[in-house]
Every structure is written in structure tokens, then in C-alpha cells.
Image (cartoon, rainbow over all chains, first blue to last red; front, side, top):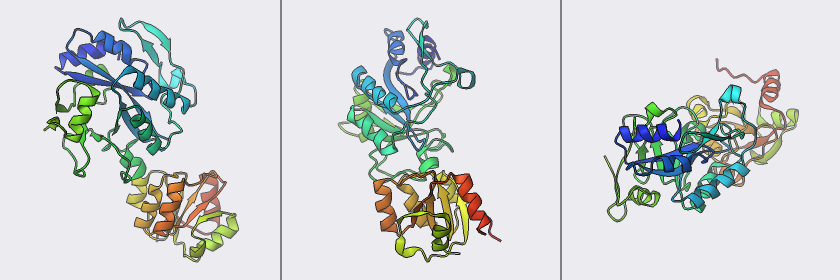
Length: 216
Length: 115
């Protein structure tokens, strides 16, 4: 999953926009965005944050400053050291796919942040909070907590299945690849009707405002 | 046996439900995944878990469980306490880890199986 491989695959699949969301970290977003310059593929940055209850929540942000601020909060609440032999190397690369450094934090771990705090943190920095792979039997809000608590304020839920499950009318649903390997990129996607490929526009589409929306 | 017997014998802290300790306990269930408890929890079970999120109150109420014991000395969150009180769910805390607590409950005669 090097920056150029991700971009290459995204372009090959005809995608207009990808969100790069590593576990509890955002250090490869900038390189991926640089690698995508002049390709027609837009890159927005985010993280897949693991709450204390081990619920995975995607946080997608509008700009670099918001992203870094959110990452700061996640890092402050994440303990443990990575063991490369068990969990693999955690590489930070540049746009030429050169390894810049290793991330030694235990990114596979869970933060100390309760679910509600994860969502609050994402919103504090103007991001979109999307419950990840809710139809999966592990690390989903449903598997971990049984149901979505009232008042959580999610912007959407993400599903993996081919069919959209029955969801509440007030909750937007997206599908994405959750790609962990380049070949998985574009295997599932959501079509949005928006003015431009930005987080703010996606947010408007999820809320169905000013003509922006999700397409079937 | 009822909740009061268990609270006394194992020195549990009662956070919610002091007045409901006469509740009969029919069995035990140990799980930290609420989707699993929704699927397999039974009426009258004492639920052993380290999950402190407020959804545990709704799930325990929904399945008519005798009560919840939080392990490892984990204290319920503020909204969990509120929800438990509102749903009449008994919330207990043990300083023991789950394995040890379940072992002692089993020794007291509480089973995880229903005949």
C-alpha cells in the first residue's frame, strides 16, 4: 500500500476520490495526496479510529491542520509499542515510495477514548464521523455495542455487503472498499453528487443539502 | 440464589439497584460483545463483563437479566449509571478479573448452562 500504488489503483479503477484512513494514524496522507497531484484523483485524509470499546470509526477531515489535530488527540490516547514481527512494519513513506520512518506506536490497538468521545473529537475538528463496516462481525458498532446509541451524532455508517441493510431513515449509508491491499481499492464505492471532491461537499451529500446527495 | 447472596459472598460493590438485591439469579453469562449477549443472554442470567458503555443497561433490560457485574474494578460511566437506574438494571462491580469471578460464581453453584 505505497502512496503511488494506491494512486495508481485508484486511477485504474476510475475513482474520482479516495479517503486514506489508516488505523489510528494519518502520517501517509500527505504523501498519497502528493502522489495523486495531476492525476485527476482527489485524496482526502482521515483515520480509522479504534474507540475504547474497540468500535472502529472513520474520521474524514477537510484539511491538513484538522487532520493533524485529530491525530494528535488519538496519539495522546493510544498506548503501546508495535511489534513488527507480529503485526508487521508500520512504514511512513513519501510520494516516491521511499520509507521516511517507522511508526512505532501500537496502531492496531484501541485508544482510551470512549466511542462518544471519538465522535466528539472528529466533530471538534470539523470532520465527518462514520461508523466503519457496521455489518461486519468484529470491531463494528453493532458487534461491539449491539446497537447505535441514541444521540451519538454519526454522519453516516459504512457497510461492506452488496445489499444495503435496513437502516434508520435518518442515517446515511455509504459503501467503501476498506482496502488493506492495493487490489482491493475500488472494489466497493459510493457515488456522490457534489460540486467538488471535498470533505465538506461529502458532508453536504450525506445530509442531502443544497442539491448534494448520495446516488444509488 | 439471589443477588444479595452473591454480593455478600464475593464482596461486590453495588452501584445501582440496592433495593433489587432480592432478585433470583438463574445462571451466568460472560461476554464483552453486546451483539453476542443480545443473541445468547438469558432471562435471570448474571452478566459478567468489562464493558462499561451505557448500552449494557439496555441490553440487560431487553434480555431480562438478573444484573450486571463489571470486572477488573471497572466503574460504569456516568450515563451508564443513569441508564441502569432508569431501566431498573442492577449494576455491581468486582475488583476480580473475569476468569476468577466466574470461577467463584461457579463454585457457589451458579451454572452457565440451562438444563
